[in-house]
Image 1 (cartoon, rainbow, N blue to C red):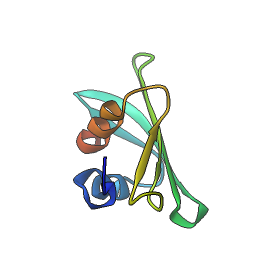
Image 2 (image 1 turned 90 degrees about the vertical axis):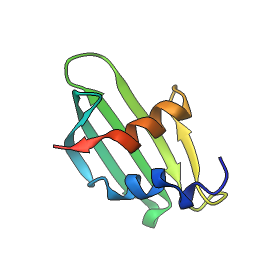
Image 3 (image 1 turned 60 degrees about the horizontal axis):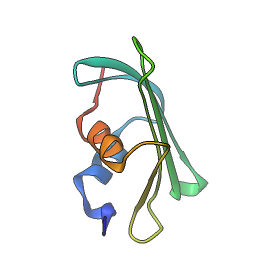
Image 4 (image 1 turned 180 degrees about the vertical axis):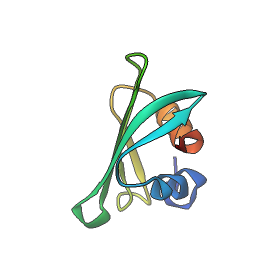
Length: 89
């Protein structure tokens, strides 16, 4: 995905609060942990659905190739959809 830093995904990712917060996604509740590290060069997200084993996890590197997403053992689409549609409780 070229120029991810210029997408709605990146804006929404930045808007998610740091540390642990509850969010809803597809009418289910998740515990989301977001950490911005290395002076903003790495944004990590990990979300665990509270009533199942579903997780969403990925690392985003804003300074590599105008934004590079590296999901953890799942598709880019799953992480992107989660970030675009998660609502902080």
